[in-house]
Length: 102
Image (cartoon, rainbow, N blue to C red; front, top):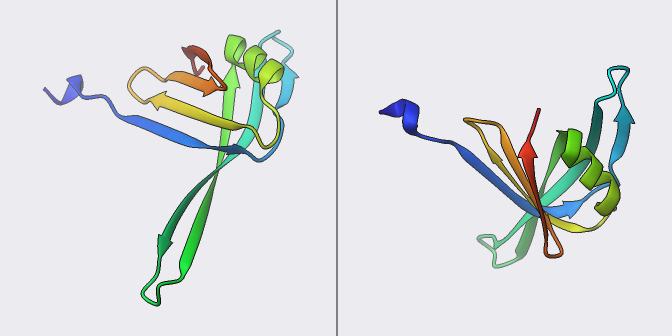
């Protein structure tokens, strides 16, 4: 039954840069961008601490076209990656785009 399980990652954060979009010799398009996710908490002294993690993402094909058109530095986005089938969903300001990651 383990084969039926799916792993999923969901990131909600802000873009660290506008996508770097390239068209490869094969004609396939890719978009590369970074995204920051932050977590805030209070330490033992009661001080508010914010921990920021950076994620480097690459999307291909139709998702690269959508990233090029809509994503800009600083924009809040949600990215969901389904590990089993490498399916990616990107949500930003009410627009949802989905497709295979590769």
